[in-house]
Amino acid sequence: MEKKKKEVVKVYTAGHCTPCEDIKKMLEEGKFTVDGKEAEIDLVDIETDAGFEEATKRELTAVPSAFRGAKQCRIKIDDENKVVLLECEDEEKDGTPGDSAEAT
Image (cartoon, rainbow, N blue to C red; front, side, top):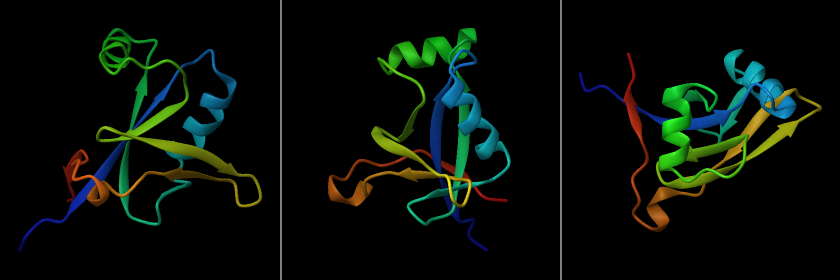
């Protein structure tokens, strides 16, 4: 049986950022959607050495920020439903592949 690949969205946060902490909590609780599809979230704390290095390579200028592959995603909070909405452009529009992870 072939394993289905889930898309991976990297979300960059920092402890000094209050909106980041709210978003991080909701993401950790599984309260998110990514363009209405199943996805895996990779939280990256830019205040760690590894996170800072990754953010520097990406030339990140603000947190919170989210990316699916090379495409930046919009981060919105649905206050009514208490869920994070990650809106990423379709990768098929320009052929840029997103990161992926094997589903188990």
